[in-house]
Amino acid sequence: MLQSNQKIIRHKVGLLNLAEKLVNVSKACRMIGLSRDTFYRYYDAVEEGGVEALLEKPRRVPDYKNRVDEETENTVVDYAIEYPAYGQVRVSNELR
Image (cartoon, rainbow, N blue to C red; front, top):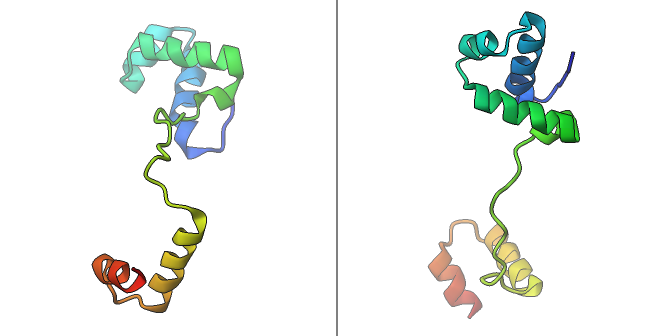
């Protein structure tokens, strides 16, 4: 029987445990409300990488093209902390 303390994957592990307990995948999927295809995706993931494979993986690759250099970013953050009431336009004008 699989165990997980992480809330994100608890329902996935619960489906796998229920199917193991009932010895009937179709019945377990009907009770939980998921398709058998979903069950087998979870099952294959656990077989390949253990319970950690059920964690959500980010699908987007970060886009660093619009990122400013670290010095500029730190300057803006410091200024925003010093003057929290100023909006983004005023901060931009003041720092320019």
